[in-house]
Length: 240
Image (cartoon, rainbow, N blue to C red; front, top):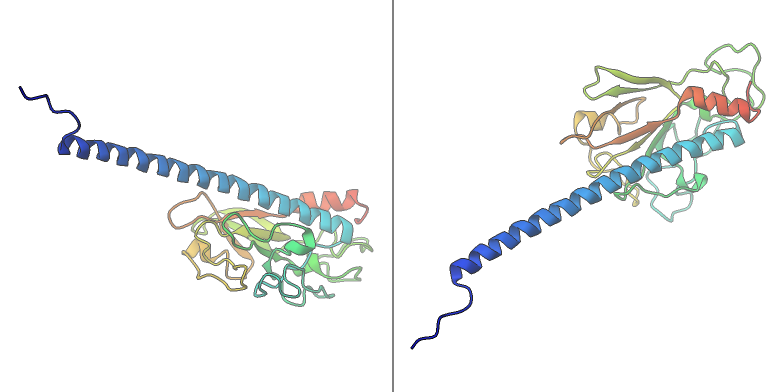
């Protein structure tokens, strides 16, 4: 008498392996989505901390910091330090990367890219000044580079550029997201630009774009709010 055969047939093994593969794929995708959501939450906290550090710097120094030179590699002399301010603005221009060493912050976002930082020259110049506030204050401030009436020059538009989200901003911060399009690396090189909306955040001008993440846009933005900055400056005794 033959004993009944035990074990899996080739067909049964194939079906089992297919099911296991599907389960593993779902697990990997779930973990990847969780990691992405975690990093997105992390970068938002990081940008908020950077914004608060900018307020604190202004309260202590009477101005916002100049950007750090983006093309310096990590460890090079001056990397992460603000470029020297002048009575007209910043020696290296007003567009670069967040001066992480000056502010005591991490160098990169969760994806290993430096954070873009652009500041209005009126808000970053040396002080005190007798003019050039961008307005005509009743009393020129003696401990601040800017006055209560000084207008910021930056604007943030919605995706596509048709809707204004914020204007008159003293400074803007950008994390270039997972794809890093337009971001500066720790080696001091700029990654290629991305979509039209992402390119607006890496071209060095005063106009930026923000919106919900989608296939061709994954940047995260934050900015210095004029009313909050001025309120903090008054509290610190730097204004009016």
